[in-house]
Length: 107
Image (cartoon, rainbow, N blue to C red; front, side, top):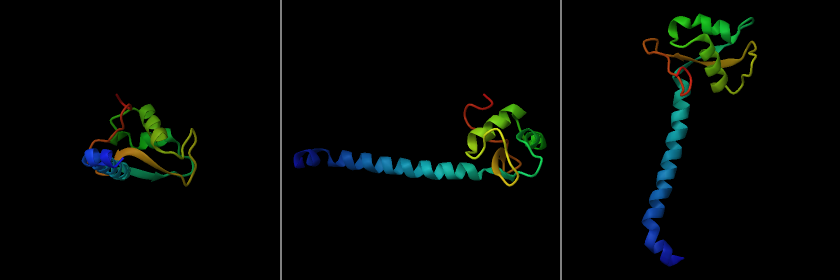
């Protein structure tokens, strides 16, 4: 075992550091991605379709694609939304940018 460690210690350390670095970057990137989008609190009478229509001037996707994106990226949503729910929508916080979309939607 000691002979194996002596031969491959640099490689083992490099692999462990690379994996650690990749995990840290993945966690930071996923947190930052959610910060780029607008969060909306659902009001009485709101639906995903109505919210899509409200933001239609800022969207480059159809209302159906909007609804699919919201369902995919918000774990608390099925087919219904309820007053008080906070949802993330694919509208950039910076209005000068075009909306950012996840892969598979709008393609």
